[in-house]
Length: 306
Length: 163
Image (cartoon, rainbow over all chains, first blue to last red; front, top):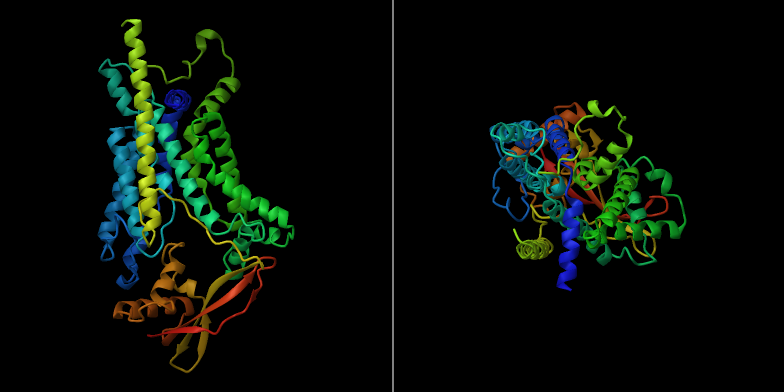
């Protein structure tokens, strides 16, 4: 049994080991995302103290609304760290600090009665820094080369652990649904949330109002069951990378469905799931890049070799 | 390095891999247990939104609606959208903060800062400077799955905030 588990983990680590250049591209894309689409914090300074209602945990100590100077400082630090990340300077500590800063920013923002669930996006830098997203196309790698040191290879284990984390997070959404009656054939859940948004006057997703009148129980229960399956089973596929990737595609379809019906966007999650598709992207790149004469060929796309 | 040494190194690496994954899963389970035991929902924890409650077997979902109205010094009254009052806040925070600060179970003891803030917001929404009171009507009702119609509306629970 232990040997089987070791085998599965060993193979999964190998399979999840991303291409160095793909990982570097992901690092640059992530940094640019933070630079160009920063989450606003400055609204917090204008909120009355009475509205402060911090969540339990690390930020339960927040006892007053942060001043505008503090919020500008946090936003500036986040911006500077994102720039350093794009350039690939001290990538590992910068990535860890960036996650810490984003978690701090969210902790302040969530101290007003509501936790939004963007934690998977915020922890991307920690996992991918250890996977080696600073080992290509970075000042770190340039300095290393100048010192005559060989390029380090990327690692699969941090990606596997990130996969476990995503699977766990999705399971944490599925369990309350099961306890809340989503599996009961006589109760419709997805349809109820679309009806709620319409009744509340919230803007439903582009297809929400169009789907609601469909009076086919089987259709709505299939959506409920598919949601539970997509969220609840992901964790159990993590040691079989091919199935895990397919499940992520299914989950992406589920996110698109949530957007179309409830207008909740998960666009940031493209940067969360992307690392798992490294082999697919590399295969596509090799398959479709123009064939040039051997002497003009660009260096082999690889990046996992030392 | 001999064949035996390589095999031993491989075995060590495989065992380390298993240990890392098991310890990591245990840590996730511990923080998961904590996140479900503690209220309100803690942060930061690895958790996704629940959307837990399914509609009843009769196809209805219980909801609380909120409406707002403002009285002015000249004796007139105007209806306002409570969420428009809260819209300086982050989109997802507006309704939970409205519930917390002005909901039926709120403390109803507001600081001068809240009165002043609310006065400014009412002015921004209505365009008038002579508001004297804001009233929020909290009303429980049932929403029907098939057409989003609202039924079984209960009487308003009022929150009155003098400005």
